Every structure is written in C-alpha cells, then in structure tokens.
Length: 130
Length: 130
Image (cartoon, rainbow over all chains, first blue to last red; front, side):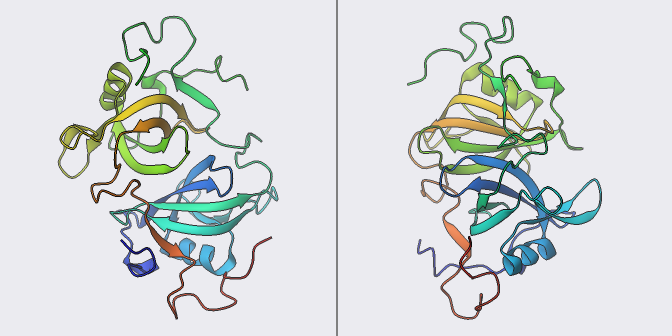
C-alpha cells in the first residue's frame, strides 16, 4: 500500500470510548521504545502543530507537553498509525530521559525471562527459540 | 535500577478496568514496532508458558494466538514492563507478516508529515527539527 496516498486525517482515527488513542513513542534513530501515553484528538493536533508531543493525562485530566517541566522534550519526526487506525507510533528525538525515573526509557524492567529462581522454570517457555 | 532485582509477577501488573494491558510488539533484532494488541492476565500467562504471543480479542471476546491460522507466529524473546507497570513491551521474532494486510508491520501508513497538499502547511510543525 502506498504510504502517501492512503492518508487519514486526525479526525478519521479511531478513538476509544473516552476519546483516547494510545501512542507508542519510539526514538527515531536508535528505534528504542521510550514510553506509551494517550492522546486525544486535540492533543494530537497540538503535537502536529508544535512538533512536540502533547498527551492527555487520564489521571490528572489535563493536557501535558512532554518535557514541559523537565526539559526532556520530544521533537516529533514522524507519526504513523496502524491498520485499524486505533494506535499511533510516534517517532521522536528524545532530549534526556523519557521516564520520570530519569531512565532513558520507561521500559527498564523485565518480566520475562527472569534470572530470579522460581519465576520461570525450565520447559515453561524458557527453551531456546528458533 | 537493577533490572533483575525489581521483578514484578504477572498478577502484580496494572490491568485496566476491563482486565487488559496493552502490549507493544517489537521485532527483537531490527527493533521495528510491529503491532499493539491487548493481553489479560491469562493470555500473558499463556504467552510466558508457550513462548508465543497470546492476546485477548476485545471485539471477538476470545483468546487468540498470533499466527494460529496464518502461521505468522511470534516467538517471544523478552517481556519488559514500564514504570507504571501498565504497559508491556514484548520483543519477538516475527515469522512472516505481523499485519493481517500482509504488511510486515501494522504501522505502514503515515499521518505526519504528509506530502499530500493541504494537510500540513508550512509553519505548522513541518519545520526542520533540531
């Protein structure tokens, strides 16, 4: 499918019953996945207009620009959407840390496989994968 | 933070009010983001036990193993979770296409920037980013 011809607009995307769409944020050059946050139609428009990521905080019920207080802004390079048009992939150039813990990425902890004894035993999905 | 020591278990993750947690699926070597789908506690357990990705279909209300009919399975290499423990990042080795459209990734369409006239005009976020 030609990427340039089949273009939806912001209002054509599928937002959930709360008007939200999840946005996977990926560093454009290293391709590291930095975080996942939620946009609504307005924050997506603000993102496109400003070239910086804006999200909707589900807990605080307000718009927030990533890096507004920390300076750890995300400059937007590209926004893709998936086959269902209900998820965004936003390629950014992250200044500093994406995570509020000061980790570069929010995904800094591993669930599987784990080296902790007892959590994963041999034969339970821990076999070498082809 | 030491990745091995701060380990949550499947039941400790934060599932939403429907019992779901979004899972970003990323090809482990190319780091391409392939798709986003939803797991619940049981499908996450099945994923860990089988080494293949299992999801919960929100529309069909049933479990499904990725590639069950198409053969386009995802062998799980690693599962990470984010700082809020409410999102998963699953590193997989994708056989064939991740998308039902036969595209390698579900994110094959671009919202921004677009070369289509009129959708993005100069000065509206289309400037070179530093």
